Image 1 (cartoon, rainbow, N blue to C red):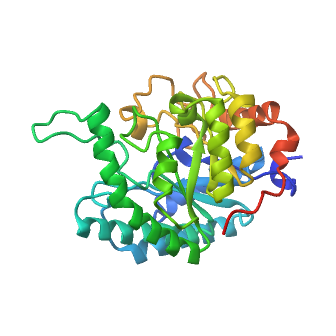
Image 2: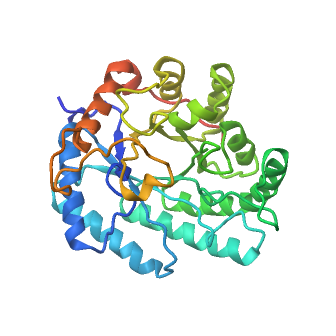
Length: 346
């Protein structure tokens, strides 16, 4: 039985970072391409997708929302009406909720609200990603020297204070749209912060709205986490506060899940016992958008229907199938099925 036909199973999504960083919802030809991928992934057993919402400076948000609604309509018309969607969103240098400039924070709030609207137009219930501080933008001094260590932590502390009221207001807006915000702590070599779950918990203590919570990615937790003992305490806090909204299964090299170091028993199993919602496989394929930013040296997983030849390397579909098989092989079925979560504090 495929996973998507088992109504008692936990939802497992797959990130479209396997194929693209831009769903191009207004491009009809490309829409047909990605729908073909979705149909293949559904057949493999996935029950949903995580869509990256491309970074844009365009402020015609109404048109963008309409474009993504049209994508959802096309999905429904193609037999994908039962497939669920989460979105992957990031703050940007232009739309930065942590900025020292009030006008820029205000613009960031409007931008991020539009991303919530897009998520709702896709019938999604989770918007995740680095929405506190612009991803990959490491701060520098006036003479262009990097800011690191104690100086970086002091710098980020003020930026977190700037972002807290913005994210709280965004959470209240998202609550009305039935969309949960899942902030992702991302490893220190990719972005200046928040890098750790401890840092993110500290941030959330200044954001009263429980609609604003956490996405935990196994890759980042493996690289920057505090270890299994503190991890248990952190999970307990997240559950008690109703803040654990989303989880991603991703290897440290962001490649093949099956052949990687993932602490299934000490990280994944406790995480999935605490988190009762959907999980996503996140694999960064060696497509042009990621080559420099992630310094990808491994071969690309070739993409059926897009790449002209079939090289003697695994396809994106093969890697996706192996990832799903690895999850089912390494996580007990009882954990994947889940149970009723404890009630969060009101």
